[in-house]
Amino acid sequence: MTSSQYELVIVGAGVVGMGAALAAHKQGVKKILIVDRHQACTGASIRNFGFITITGLRQKIMQERSLRSREIWLDVIKKAKITINHRGLYLIAQHKESIPVLEEYLKIDPRSTVRLLSKKEMESQHPLFKKNKNFGGLHSTDEVRIEPRLAIPAVAKYLQSLGIDFLWKEEVLDFTHQQIISQKRKIKFKKLIMAPGNHLKGLGRDLFEKRKIQSSKLHMLRVMPEKKFKLPGGIMADLTLMRYPGYENLPSKKKLDKVIHKTCRAELDNGIHVIVVQGKDGSLTIGDSHHYTHDTHYPFENETVDNLILNKFNQILPIGKYNVVERWVGEYPSGKNDYLDHWLDKNICIANVTTGIGMSTGFAFAEDVINKLY
Image 1 (cartoon, rainbow, N blue to C red):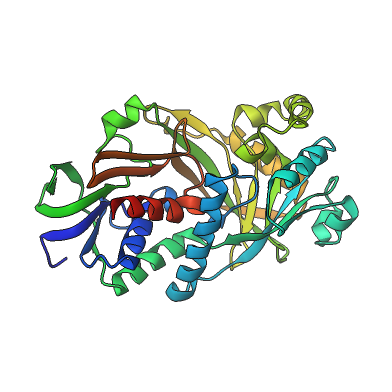
Image 2 (cartoon, rainbow, N blue to C red; image 1 turned 90 degrees about the vertical axis):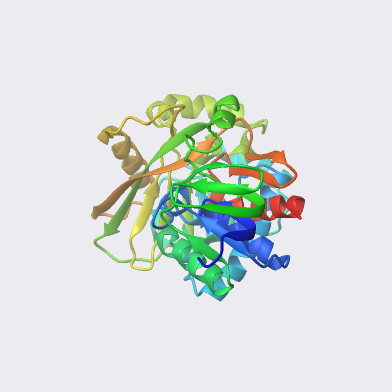
């Protein structure tokens, strides 16, 4: 960092913070600084599936933002030389009651890139689909998967090449209408965006408490199969229909709810819905569960939750033997609304994606914030 005064200062180097910097740069803002309290991005933006998802999101704003974010991601992926691991999504219908829900969903999703597959069509997509119990499912070609722990640092490096400054290991303790204040320095700004992600006990704490925003904790695993194979795209179990907002008000879902509450009670109690994506090395990232708190999460993890996730994984992808090579805790802020953009005045905004779709919609949300700011 070479300056103590910037046109735009952004606190938080996650997807929303870096997305805001990119959008501002495109608008011609010259002096931009991103400040983060860690040595690199360590929060929700690198702990997720890296799966840019469109299918099953709430119509209008949420899905529009996911499609716009996908456009931005594809441009950044090319310029930052980020590897795409695979494209597309297969949602496996393990319950016959899921099929009417998916049929109704297709009537409200305007895309031509998503379609219903019969059992025979699903089984033709991959040999593993012949081994699992399925009644068909949904296929979308729009989804994109990247490795977040590699992609997010690559985005930061790309932004630096554009002339955007970063200040790492610097926690912002306070701010006025003209400057941010850390333990080490004061930096003046013309405009300020605070994008704290799941850091809910720092700046903006009173607002987060007032809006009843919670921290969501996710169990995540990475496994290495003994036999190598390539997934045709991201995989979801039909437990997803219980969590993704695009399905929640469909008429046939009431019947599915009753069935899944009988067959998957433990999974529902732990917020499990199961997504599987694949890395360049052939490993599979599997998750996730959801537990919420307004305070600090209990630090000790229950193996029962991981076992529930892996049991459901074994059902939808019977790959044989594998080794669990990593476990970690994902996180994201969760609120009543999908997004938070709170304006303290015309030049200062607190911006957060307050549901688990930051990777999928964060770039477009940040762009919308910048469009209001300039």
